[in-house]
Structure formats: structure tokens, C-alpha cells
Amino acid sequence: MTGIFAYEFMQRALAAGLIVGVVAPTIGLFLTVRRYSMISDTLSHVALAGVALGLLVGVHPAVGALFATLGAALVIERIRQSGSYSGDSLLALILNGSLALAVVVMGITKSFNAGVLGYLFGNIVTVSPADLALIAISGAVALAAVILLYKELFYVSSDEEVAAAQGLNVGLLNFVLVATAALVISASMRVVGVLLIGALMVIPVLAAMNVARSFLGALAVAVVFSVLSVLIGLVGSFELNLASGGTIVLVSMVFFASSFAFKRTG
Amino acid sequence: MPVKTDQPCIELRGVSFGYGPIPVVENISLKVEEGEYLGIIGPNGGGKTTILKLMMGLLEPSAGEVLLFGEPVRRSKRRSAIGYVQQRHAMDPLFPASVEEVVVSGRTAMRGLFRGFTKHDLDVAVKALDTAGVGHLRRRKISSLSGGERQRVLIARALAGEPEILFLDEPTSAVDAPSQEAFYAFISDLHRKAKLSIIMVSHDIDAVSHQVQSVACLNRHVTCHGPTEQILRSGKLKAVFQEPPEIRHQHP
Image 1 (tube, each protein chain N blue to C red):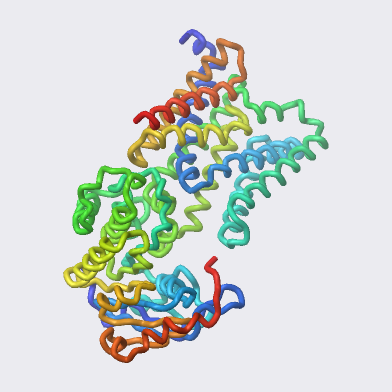
Image 2 (image 1 turned 135 degrees about the horizontal axis):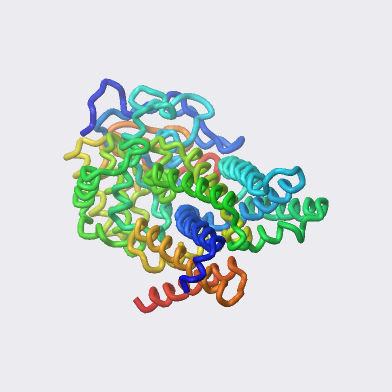
């Protein structure tokens, strides 16, 4: 089984997968406990529009995705703070609008069958050295943000109003959280595809919440489930000639089902 | 321990606020001195929670100003001295954290950015849990607690921040009647021993009037304010509750 990692492209795939496997659930835990699970799906669709726009104007697709998702993160937080729309309707609005934009721009550039399918469904074994570098830098920035602001993000996630009463800049912390998610999504869409990133940010987290007894414990277990999903999914997809992104997420679903059964019996 | 200053803890000067065009509170002027235990009572829709949020800087008044220890509250550097316990639905009961994690998080604001918690922070959190009578729950998940236990844990979280002023918004709404009495006794004891300033909002006129030192009756305006015994003797409390709020509104 370890023989497959003798290939250079599989070594890059493994490195990229492990980085995403650690970072995605780390951000995902804070989003999920805030009932922001759908934001990763929304930003994934925004990222797709960014990829399409990047191809249209000749910018690297990942850069297009990053700018699009960061812009969307800013808009989402601004509108959410204004209280004009409920969280789910706001996310649905942006999700559908960006999907429509992506489809229209792809039609203009005739790029639907070119590189975009790779971003839609992911293909971890095509990760280039440049992609790996982007994933590593983005992952390091995201992890650093969470580590440095861990206690503030925990406090705001557990009780936003009390945190605000004590003078924490709740709006800025929320933006940092969503912007970090945008960064992770933009960087990792080559690994699992934009349609499946949301799943990797949420499913290992939900699985961990079934078994962990603390927030830090949930974070650790979510990362372990996620990394194992990437490893097993990567090897499984290679050996069985399956789609890598889908296989990774299906493995994470097995972890969720197992943890759910454990919770019911425990 | 609270730091003594010459300024009132909280001062409202001609404060008004409304959601859109609908006024919720109008021209409120009120002082809360250090060490005071104030009860804010009034009918539903009278603006009690709104005034509490204005005091903490969570809402910005449309007119007037709110001072915390003499400084505009929203710019005050002493907001970390605020302890706040909300109504029962404020914190997600399914939040996946241990009691200890929740309580030590009450020290986030005072610890400052980019500084992790130390052993001292954990020791203070454990002491706060013991003070609130729930030290034995520290390893439990917050989601496994009863409403009354969770409320005491949230009090412990507020105490862990070593507050100088404690805001309680309908703090017994999640607990049964016998537990309510014990809770009020605990808060009174806390006020006496820790010399905390406490502002408690409640619709429970009997409970509040037997616990607090002073009372403010709110029905869009402050209709009466003074030492509890004096207000009780005047019969003004009953009048407040017999009158419906002047304009009904919904909180956002």
C-alpha cells in the first residue's frame, strides 16, 4: 500500500491532503458550532465563480477564488451585522447568485469542460508543486489565525453577546473566521473540489462532536477523523480507481456513522 | 476585587432608544453607585432588557449617553470589568464544550489578545465554580446539565472574569421555584461578600423586592427609582404593573 507514495505526484497529493485534512475541520468546528455550517458551501460556490472569473480575465483560478471568497466573506458579515436578513436566507442568496454567475461566465469562456470540472469535483493527484505551495501557505496562515485567536474565537462562538458586552470586537473576529474559511476553501478546492470542501469542513466535526467531551477534544478528534479520511480515501481512490474527492468524503461519512452509533450506545 | 473610584459604576444621562421609529425607552437618567444592588422591574415590553443592553454598550442610544466608570461605555477600556448573565436561551445548550472551558472563557477579555490562559486563569475558574456551588460539574459537558446547573455555570463564568459590575437578565427564568429562592440567596450572599455592584432585571416583583437594595421601575420611562423599602411603601410598584406598556414592541 505504501508503494503508491513512491510516486512524486502521490507524495504531493498526500501532503496537500494532510494539510487540508488538518485545516478544514479546525475552521469548520468554529463555523459549525455557530450554526454557520452552510457558509462553507456558500463560499465554495463563490469560489467556483471566482475560478470562472479568473479564467475569463486570465488570472490564476485560485487567486480569482481567493478574492471572490474574501469579498463574499466581507459582504456576508456586513449584511449579517445589519440584521436585515436571517443567516440561512443570506447564505442561500449568495450561494445561488454566485452559482448562476459561475455558470454564465463558464458559458462565455467555454471553459466548463476544461479546468472547471477539476475544481468542481477535485482531483488530488493532479496537485502541482505550485498548488502545494499555495495550500501550505494558506493552511499555515489559517492555522496561525486560529491558534493566536483561539480563546477569542471560542468565546465569541459560545456566547457572542457576552463577548461583545466585555468589549471584544465581535464583528472583526467573525470576519476573521469567515475570511479564514474563504482562504482554506480557495486553497483546497483542487484537493477535494469545491462541491465537497463544505463536507470536509463539517462531517468530521459532527462526527467528533458525537464522541468528544470538550471543545478542544472535539477539535483534536475532528482533525484525526479528517486526516484519516484523507489518507484512507486517497489510497482507496487510487487502488479502486475512484474519484478522490468523493471517496475522501464518503470515508468521513463512515466516521460520522460510526461515531453516531457510538453515541447512541454510549 | 473591585477598584474604588469616585465615579458611579453606571450613569445614564437622558438616554433614549428605539427599534426603528418605535421608541422603547425615552429620556432615562439613572445612576448606579459602586457596591449597589439594583433591581430593574417593569411589565413585559417596558424596556428592561433594552436598558440593560444600553448600559453594557451593546446598543447605542439614539439620544443621551451611557457612562461606565465615568467614560462613554462603548469606548471604555473597563468593559472587561463587566460580568453578564443572560436569560436561559442565550447560550446554545448543545455547544460542545466542558464546563471548565466555558467558565475559563469568562477571562478572555481581561487576558487580552494573543495571550493564552495560564494556570492562574484555570485556578480562578475553578474557584468561581466552587463559589457558584458547581465545582463538582467541572469535567461535565455543558450540554449534559440541567437548566439550573447551567445557569450557575454561567454565573461562574461571569465571576471568573473578576467583574466589578454584574448584570443579570431574568436570571431565574430557567430554574424551578425552589431553585429560584436558592439562587437569589446566592446572589445576595455574593453581593455582601464580594462587594460587587449588581444590576438585575426581572419581571418577578416579589423576588426582586426582597433581595435588592434599590429598585428602578421601567415602563418606557423610569416611573420610580429609590431604596426598595421606600418604593414598596409608596405603592408605586403595583401601579407600574397595572399599566400596560405604553407602546408594545419586539426585540430584534
